Image (tube, rainbow, N blue to C red; front, side):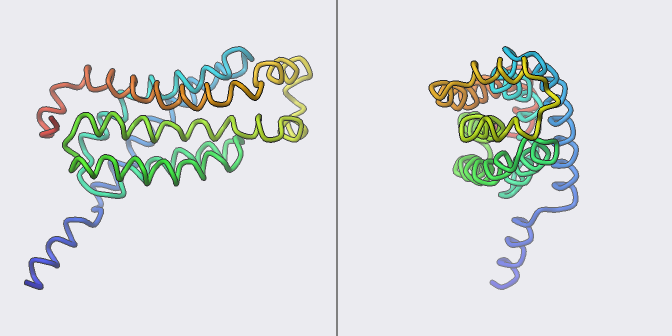
Length: 201
């Protein structure tokens, strides 16, 4: 009995291979996110990051999901994404969102035993809400946010101040989730054979 419990606990622990997969797919996702984020230098494209990052990142994340069989992998990769956004100047909110959304996304995927396409789609939608953390400071204290970012220029700051009105907060939050769902569906469409091999139905 003890031997069986030990084997089960070992199976639940993340292996070196699991951590390598997390590192590889996190790196790919961050490259995609960084490339898309370059569009943020155009004021009108800034809110579109809540659409494009989850959408384009969906293919990479769905390929990652075919490797996920244990609790913790989705949490870790989402926290890494949040931490990356923090250290690249987006504030600490994405990191906090990364922890919360990562755990919730992991629990959703786990509820489907990591073999449910529908749960994978929902899981990716939840983890994509992490991107909203980047925008939260613009709603909480936009003047304080730009007081340390004067290098952006007055025209850029004025344009973003006009764009990020309070009513846009739920819109951007919703877009992060909805396009996370759409990105996952797009990823599953392109990676149908990978899902079949991984036993995800």
